[in-house]
Amino acid sequence: MPDHPNALREIRITGESIAPGEAYLAETPVLRAHAGTQPDLFLRWNAVPKAAAAVDVVVHLHGFSQQRGDMALAEKVPRSGLDLSRRARPTLALLPRGNWLGRTYYDFLALLDGGLDRLVDYAIEQFARAAGLSKLDVDRFILTAHSGGGMPAIDAVAGAARAPDELHIFDGLYGRDPSLGDPMQGIEVLERWLRRRLELEPDRPGALRVVYIEWQTGPYSRALGDLISRHLQKPEPALATDLARRYRVEPSGVPHGYVATVCGPELLADPAAEFDWQRMI
Image (tube, rainbow, N blue to C red; front, side, top):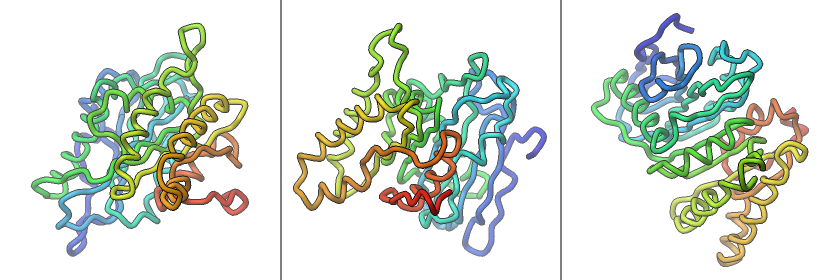
């Protein structure tokens, strides 16, 4: 990892393509309000044609850290699931460092109220400039989250102008503290997003994949599963069958710390992937 990276210098051009690579950025303007260490933004990309007008963007929100406020972002990269090696579409993946709240907890306050849009725009601009491209747009947008990043992902979606095409949540739907209000608060955000998302099917396919562990995130996850089932009763049967492969909630076959690691690459390769837990572990 570079000591104090301030620009993308790791981009390599091979022929007519930008070669796969990764980099860290520090002092990201959008994340300035977040407490923690630098660098604060990790980027990874697969092969991108120089002639590309747009790329897909994946943003992953990480969970807690036993390193507390001293957590290095590199700690979260291996278990983020941001493996683009089997993804055919040109893609830029982002892992922002969250905001340290105290103890082991992190949230993503800078991504609220349109901050998620601003983060994506900033990263795309930096990448395009470093690659010598005059302009690069976002095609498909995928938001993924693990553990403590799950509820912040819902909050970020609520204030974002760019709605995700796909949302993958890995044992992260803990719900709200009942002492502070409705423990299911936020599920209405997911329902609004799901309703609009399904209106785009099948012309622009999307996905909502949730993998949970019952004793941690079971109640909220199962409630979302029931909501999905109700919405999938409306399309005609053939379409509903296809949608059910991409919009579903299911129990995990691996421990909490590994859900994003093993499921993320599968879903980035195919959002309708069936998890073969024995093979994956």
